[in-house]
Length: 305
Image (cartoon, rainbow, N blue to C red; front, side, top):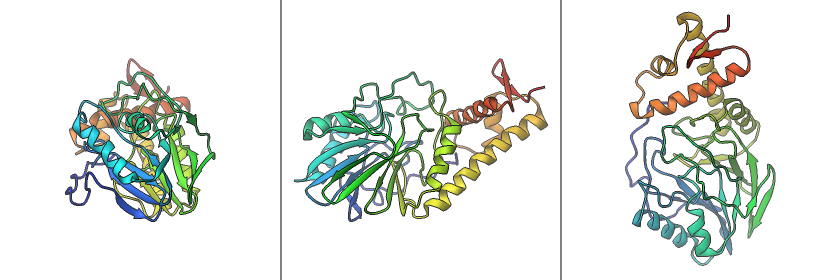
């Protein structure tokens, strides 16, 4: 996780209208910028013919995106859909900045909610918007490699657990685009927050994307990624470097508690992101514990004797 860059001027990230990114893909930005969502959650529309799929319809009724703002984003999605039929409402995962608007959108269009599995659990992480959407109820769950089709487009599910256990990416078969949700983002690394977030699964999912040949990645937050393999390779290297950093701190400095790791590893980090950094450190430590390389005693981590 890096220092959060300034949120760009809104003229570069307009609200309330769809931006054409390529012939089959448009983007509508939700009004929920934050230190964790950057400019906000990006909803994507796939299709240029008689029907479309809507990917990650976004937040609805959250504490900081309520009333007219939530309704405004829903209206912007419906305006972008226009006269087309919504064939599928597709969610990458069920954090509350991604899936809640699937329900009012389904009510407005009659479209089924398709994609990731439901997941409800307690979340003591630092993000109120990242709590799980307890009311998410998909009409159909997609397995890895399963497809949905429309007029001139085909979307294939790519299972990418790690950020959450139910996370899916989606490829557009016709264009080589991949929608990466929160798994890969161009502006920051993803938070991996136990107990549901799993670092070993996240690394395996990163390797899975690295081995693909996608042309472009469209994340839920931040700019598109035009060099997918290069970026993902860097992300893998970054996570391995963090693991080595943890082991060096324990070998050279003795036992550490998580706040001590964060202070040593994330110098200069925006204080608003310290909690998220601590969750990712914990994810690394739990992975190393499974490997037998560290152990914990009274919330203090150390190298086994």
